Amino acid sequence: MEPENGDPRQALETTSSLEGLQSAEQRNVLNIVDQLRKCGLESTLSLPQLVVCGDQSAGKSSVLEALTEVPFPRNDNLCTRFATEIILRRAPNDAITIKVIPDDERPKEERDRIEAFKESISDFGELPSLMDKATTLMGINDKSTSKSRAFAKDVLSIEIEGRSRPQLTLVDLPGLVQTETRGVTEEDVQLVTKITDHYISQHRTICLAVVLATNDYANQGILKKVRKVDPEGDRTLGIITKPDRLPSGSGSERAFLGLARNEDIFFKLGWHVLKNRSYEEGSSSFEQRNVSEIGYFRKSNFSSLSKECIGITSLRDRLSQLLFDHVKQELPKLRKDLEEALTDSQLLLGAMGDQRATPQE
Image (tube, rainbow, N blue to C red):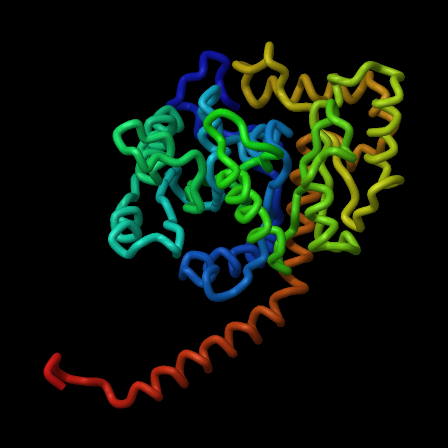
């Protein structure tokens, strides 16, 4: 459990709900995809993954934080400026490794410089300063250059190992921006759209579409996007955040209750409701966050929903089973794709002729 005093040296500990997430069979199956990812094959193959997407300020990062129990830096909005890949891995020792995966469209010199960045830390207290370094490396909000940017197509990768960690990888995307504002240009708006489209269009991606309860869901662009790439709702799970901000018994609350019951926008994977930390609860521990959420769902009108569709603990169970089933279904196709990619590479190597012994040859 994360301590109330916020001691970062204890921050690698987890709550019991995260520790008991997966069975040995689930970890073994998900480990196959993890090993392919470690080999760098995600650039060659479309790998099964969970992607957290939504409009700006929908509460995506709070969802990711609650799921992974990684205390992201607050107030500076850093993790929404680029895709953030969180890799949880069960291992004998606790470790955190941070690196940046550069955008393929960058010049080689920039890619080499970014790929050279790799840091290992022992506690989450060092995470804010490392994210600052990574952000500057990407050229985001860098006051020392005129080429500073608001968003980047690079990916921040945070790998967390520990004995109580589940085998799970999630990607948090920058929130969709509806219009340009001070500091955000039309080019930035299009870039964020491009990043989102790239991830959610991959046929092996499970989309976690986050919508904010205080904004009419018909106005939230992420729903239109996921329905375009996944018209049958086969690989989309909707997540409703901040239901506690709705007036009890109001028309807005009834509308979101209907959405949560899959009565309006239908997804085969259904919907889930979470209560994120309120502003006043910003410094609370993960354990306190979970207790507050349980108390809210016990007394609110959302208590009428199935227990499998509310709260962070049931969402973890749901996602773990979803990804497990998804990977088992995709593994035969993934093996076929891998064999085809290997054959293509061998043909290309054969076309290059015999290996040369010296540069002169």
